[in-house]
Length: 139
Image (cartoon, rainbow, N blue to C red; front, side, top):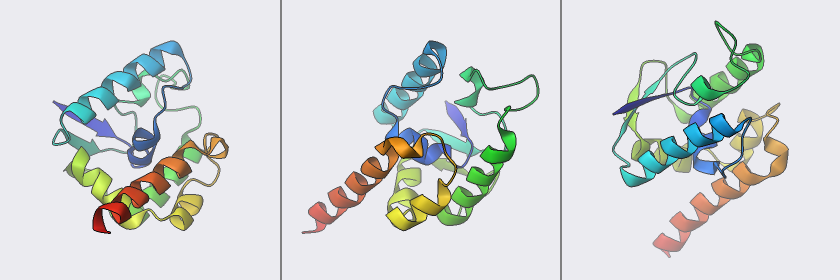
């Protein structure tokens, strides 16, 4: 099984809390998160358009997201920070390693500028927890 992710969806998936745009979107995302948690070696292909998560989003138009311009900015910043590019294939485990290595809290604020979910604080807390687990393991 291979999933496709837009670059910003690596952090979104790490912070997913069972909330979303619609019941169908949430159900789809829950299945993706469960699969990745059960097998962190599942393959993820980095894409620039509709991905495994977007497919169930009510903001998807016939051709692209009705928020495409904003989403492209998020994707570009996340790609740059994480060091990934379109067409890359990596495991969920590797995606989490890249988040831990490159996505500092400061980088998060830059990468997620303009995201409507950012103000909820979930992603920032999840990112801090990821870094804290790493520090505790090395203590």
